[in-house]
Image (tube, rainbow, N blue to C red; front, side, top):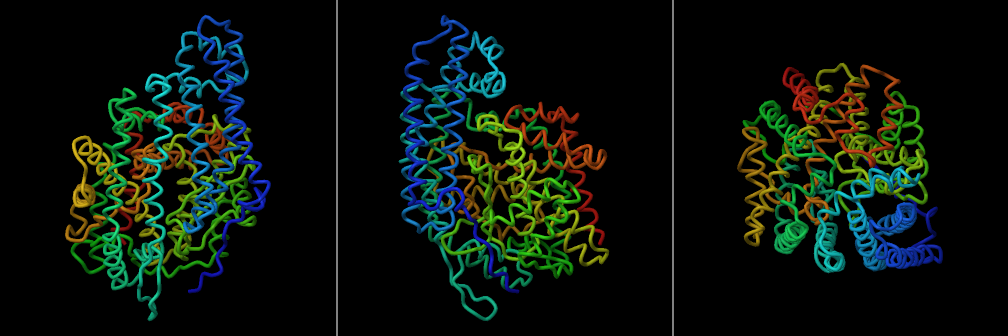
Length: 601
């Protein structure tokens, strides 16, 4: 079916263009704010210590927080505006130039934050009084406590400055290389009787094509294309992981995983409780894979069959249909959520058109000064893509809750583990509604299939990515990994999680090439937070089923406060103990019941 025209996002209300006077003024204002704060820190932080009068220390802390928030609001808007062009057209040389210029500012901002954290560590003996004696400080107590904790894992100020500057020419540059290479790849592919030049996101979308011959050819084409760039991407991932290892050691960290656990505001006990429950669920997922293989007339699934539809789900969606499906079902959950989604659709906050040069996958970004968000996706009319839009609207609604509560940027600094809460709640709302909309067994099977494909990705595939990254980091401490090493590790991880359900002859050894999550030195282990988001949101959904509309105020309040408490603390407000395996197992049971239903149909 035709799915054009599809919307491109509109950011003209932010600034007229990248070359406009207004954008240039905002860019220059960011620079001016950085310079002012740099001088303020030199004048005030370096000349004060625990012997300084507590009232003065409290005032210095409050002004630092206020100016940091103002700077982060401005710089966050400028960064997102540039990204609006860079991520949708990697050949836009001017956008890439502006991002390169902005990254110089970003490094300075990061250094200012670290400088402030180091100072908070120095005055930590009197921090309680500083927080108690000033309203701004008390509102930012969590940020200050986190700064105190992070100060224990810092290099010297000069070393942190050097690390921030070198990141642009090092890990940051490798990250950019991965994005550029993967976004500009195209492949000649015969589809519907016509040879087309497909960008990689469009080729990857063929994973879910109903015809096996097309899925198989797409898989072979994908493997062939990734092979052509495996060497530069292996170099990139080696450089990035080496950077993470080196800096975490220099900062006194046990390892990179410890850093990730602290950054995501959880603890080892919580992570292991969740991972243990996930491991216990593997046999049920293997049963799902084997049942699906049987439906496809096979003994086991090949990789190109994982996303294959089954049943008789003949649903494809035009853009307007996708919009109406999402908004209608959001309304049943929360009128506020529905109104927000309509605002996003009506104001062209979503860039949906797949095209060459555009980044694959999907994401949501915040424009804090405008108190708005923008969403990127690659819509192809499938139910899976409808669910993706609902997911990203959840992120945007999460931002909206914080904006409405007048939270500052420092208060909105949500960990990845909680950042997925609203997004997965929103996709669950839509998926459950679609599932409930049919009594036809074959159509129900098709909808269940779509749901379980997503669940399997977040539980099984995410666990494989966790194993992969952990092993890569372990080996990288001793030697540089070749492309062959990386392929071997990812295949081993896939075997360990997909188990007997997958044909070991046909895995996806190049998964590491195109997943951007592996290519960030500052966000290692960008995998288990997705699992935590799914299972935490599933647990919240169960509470919603019990409490109904009375659940919503507590839920939106939680979304507004995800940057102001740990996961365990916020979960505790709902009576949830994240350190107990039972909570995660109970959430998984909801998914396992879907597997039982799928296997019975």
